[in-house]
Length: 174
Image 1 (tube, rainbow, N blue to C red):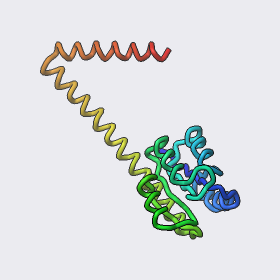
Image 2: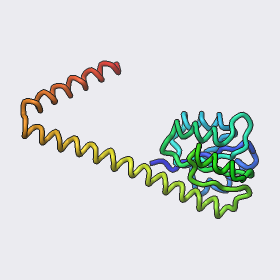
Image 3: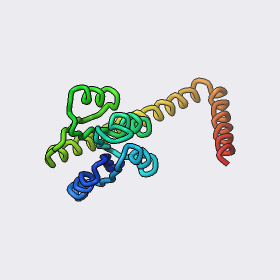
């Protein structure tokens, strides 16, 4: 499970400061724009947490986080902004489905608490996803065993079909 955090802000000095302050505790990556952030998600992801500024040129934080959600739906998203008005907060929550909305200047303590909460939330999301996948696999396995007992002919046909599909998929990949 990843513990990487992506910070996205057009203020390079702020990014460098946050990276210095947080890199002793966290695995930090930075991007200077929404476009660069999307590239990092695609090339270096997944990230457990993404923290984005709201006001950035060309792509604001809400547009960035909305697109980031499409690329990495399990990632926890946060906004860190100096523009903390109610319409901005509502858009961020409704469109970007953010986990936390933080105002600049943000204390190191509050930022650390928020990042820790974001990492815990990501762990919960991934644990739930794994639990659901395992439950589904076990349910299918149990139903297959019941089919083998109740109707051996149908079970035999299902096994042959499964082997044929596996062979087709293997050939399609080559």
